[in-house]
Amino acid sequence: MNIDLLSRSEEDTLAIARALGAVLVPGDVVALTGELGAGKTVFCKGVGESLGVSPERIVSPTFTIVTEHEGAVPLYHVDLYRLSSEWEAACIGLEEILNGEGVCLVEWPEIIVSLLPKHCIKVRFLFSDADGRRLNIDAEDTPRMHGFLTRCKSHLPGG
Image (tube, rainbow, N blue to C red; front, top):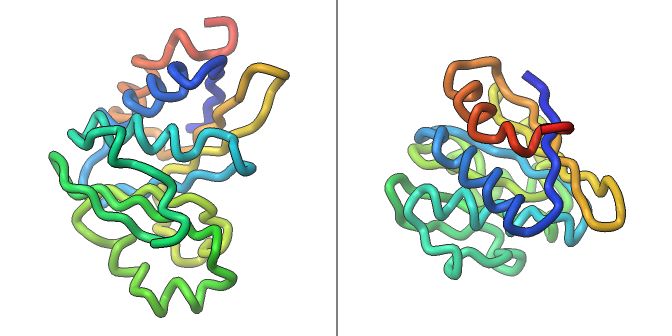
C-alpha cells in the first residue's frame, strides 16, 4: 500500500504519527526519510506518545545514534545522520535492534538499506508548498495499515 498524506502543521504531523503508532507492534521498523527539518523527529514524538512515551523525552539522538525509551513496548529511536556506512551500523549492533522486540524508528535509513527488514514501513517527508508537507507512506497492505488509513482520512488529499 502506498499512500500520500498531507500535513499543514506540526499538529497534523503528530496526529498522523499517533495514528501510525496506534497500529505498530513489537518488531515493526519505520524508516523515516526526508531533508533536515522535514519533521522526522516530530513524527517520532507522535509515535512515541501513542506507545506511552512522553513526547518531551524524544529528541533528536544525533549524538547518541540510538535512544531506547520504555513504554507499552520498547521504542528505539535511531538517527544515522552521523554514520557513513552500513559497516559502522553493524559495528554498533544495529541489526539486533532492527530485529528486536521493540518498535524501531530509523531516521536517515538510506545509509542501511540492506539491513532494513523486508517489510519495514517507509515514510518519506516531502515539502509540498510553503507551509505544508506530504508524507508518503509505503507499507504492506494489511488490516492494521487499513486501520491506520481510516484514522488518517482527514489528511488524505481532498480529505
